[in-house]
Image 1 (cartoon, rainbow, N blue to C red):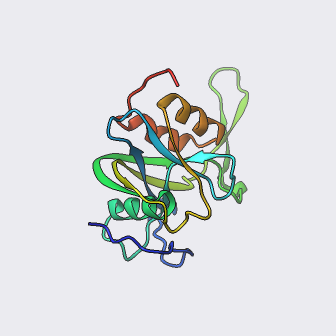
Image 2: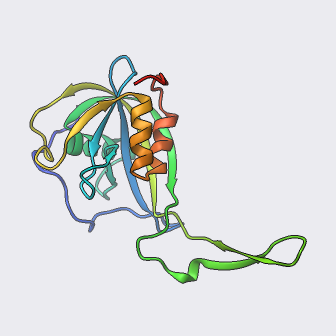
Length: 184
């Protein structure tokens, strides 16, 4: 059973980064109810009007990504459960917060000789997602004073992740076993 802390881990001194791309390694859960027709989402700490999935940075003292995903889900969403499957790796390809022009390059288009600018950059984060069947939801949890949480249908969760401009989180939802009812 996962140990439930009373406070969230903070800071990035123990964060793990990809040796290949330099991307921050992040783990999280798509938290489904028992009938798999709802997903538990939380408000973003940066944008209180946006709903996202619980996730956070992998730390060097954690044995695996699943442990991180469950810890972050406890800290941010106040729920525990059973991991039912890995949803694989999703690259966060949004431009870096501090844009660096060294990632820009020109390529020639085929045919008429015009050039087209292609912007390339490494992933901002490398997400490792897991599907979690929620077993318990607790009133008191480390970030209960900072975040709201709510169950959403597939359709509404999809809308919220699009509104939040989080395609990498939407990809994790799409990979999950949530029932895709298109009615709210």
